[in-house]
Length: 218
Image: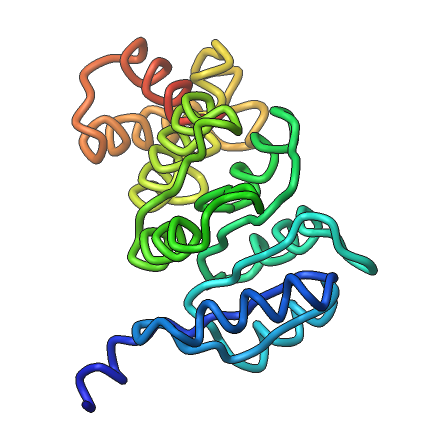
């Protein structure tokens, strides 16, 4: 039994409609791999619950009072170790979907989805994957998520200064222009570029510019 307890994902649920929130609670409490640690009726309650409970997953309604789902995502994205987020919505246009994923949502599901599919989406997101509902522009979401993963990988490998130089290269700046913009010596830019090529296993400035653009670091 101890092993089952250790494997459980701690979940915060958020929806401003009591009936929907109650349904979500009942649904997730039936699943042995999930532990519901908080149920919230607005965005500020979600942020407080995240600070208090340190959940693995937040199932987050888009339309909520005080702070809506996108604003909650924005604030969570500013934290050092944000939980994974599954966004729950009745309707969302493509621009909002893209914004949600850019802000850190790992999945977006429609409220009309069958309960067991919602649980499967939560299971996948909590386990480190993504859930892309085709009814919400799934192919576009996949492109954005892939780009986001590439950017996170690039940011993990490079220092802040190296990232600044990569941005300059992706904008077509020469070494001297980058040096002037960053207030460093041109020779220092060359040293950083050499280190960047080695870290990213690239051979040329063109390859670096393409890599940066594909990763979304611009």
